[in-house]
Amino acid sequence: MAGRPQLVVFDVNETLSDLTPMADRFAAVGAPPHLAATWFAGLLRDGFALTLTGANPRFAEVGEGVLRQVLAAVPLERTLEDAVAAVLAGFGELAVHPDVVPGLRALTAARHRLVTLTNGATAVPQGLLTQAGVRDAFERLLSVTDAGAWKPARAAYEYAAAECGVPVGEALLVAVHPWDVHGAKAAGMQAAWINRSGGPYPGHFLSPDLVADGVDDLATQLAVV
Amino acid sequence: MAGRPQLVVFDVNETLSDLTPMADRFAAVGAPPHLAATWFAGLLRDGFALTLTGANPRFAEVGEGVLRQVLAAVPLERTLEDAVAAVLAGFGELAVHPDVVPGLRALTAARHRLVTLTNGATAVPQGLLTQAGVRDAFERLLSVTDAGAWKPARAAYEYAAAECGVPVGEALLVAVHPWDVHGAKAAGMQAAWINRSGGPYPGHFLSPDLVADGVDDLATQLAVV
Image (tube, rainbow over the protein chains, first blue to last red):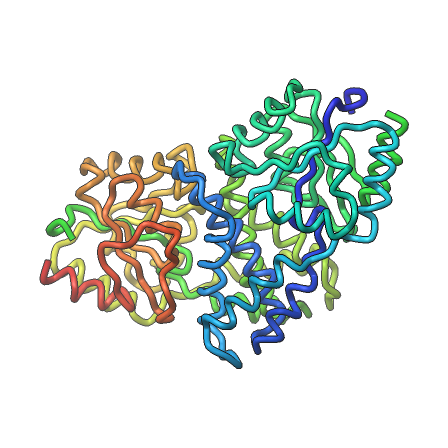
């Protein structure tokens, strides 16, 4: 780490929110629960593909399109449209990981400036963080909708830094997704990888400056930078 | 379709090759077979992410990195390295779909110029098509390695057309993947979607000019263009 960051930029989906209940949503409509992981990887695949062709699609629209494809391939206990709606509803009812609230409280106590930056709509972190009682920890909730391109495109990270009046190199992205860490590093931002599972970091991506096993651990590590 | 295409550009993985045996490879190392789909979606997700940051990674390297992540999260009946090697070996032993050989024969009989364009190495279609006895149907085997960017980036499609001396709008991409159809259309190429499963085409992507249920059906449809 190149000193204390002037701004900490949190990814939202899976970094703050716990997506594991999505598997139960698939099970509830009669689909195999493991399709949740295939769906989310496919959502990002298609979103990145669109970004590569210069589009800046709505996250929810891509999520619904991929979900319809994934669910159309398996027998369901209700109509496809009902199943799609039931699974998508689950995305708005997720909770934060247990390490998130103590971690955010420690970061704000240490007077860090915190914002979120998501490929989705800002309504998702707004609901998630309000529900968890930590909306006040964040100065801004930013979305790539206003950046012109999804993460991991450089424009998304530059947008977040510029919106907050901080040089991109003085900001720290925090994410569970290696592709997000890579995008931040490629854009000249610092990056922390939240590795809750203990799995390996892929060698094909630029490495993080810092690895933490949760947001609480991140706060502890940043306290001594 | 805007008339008979001057060049037919085939995607390779899943368009010509049948990836379903990959699920057995996962099962053989003690992993859930459904991880094959999550792995392949994750491979494309990470490859597209790298392409978005200006990199042009080797397909095999990304595939191996994502596979190591996917397999590290589950109990295995052998070491992680052995399991990774065993699954990856399966990728070189795939066969073509049943509709491919008759389709290619019909297209060559109708004097279509055929090439492949893959995000992977040309060694894969070389082995696959030789094994199927249809290597001679293709004038060239092209890879994005020489294009500077993975599909669905515009540069990949422009590269294929330029290499073959054909205006991009006179070439027809053939792919099972909607993101590939979208990329071709965004680059000004024509595109045919091979839909073997009968599933829906995602509304977030540009639509194909033609939909066929296999390469044989594609040949039949092109015969009357």
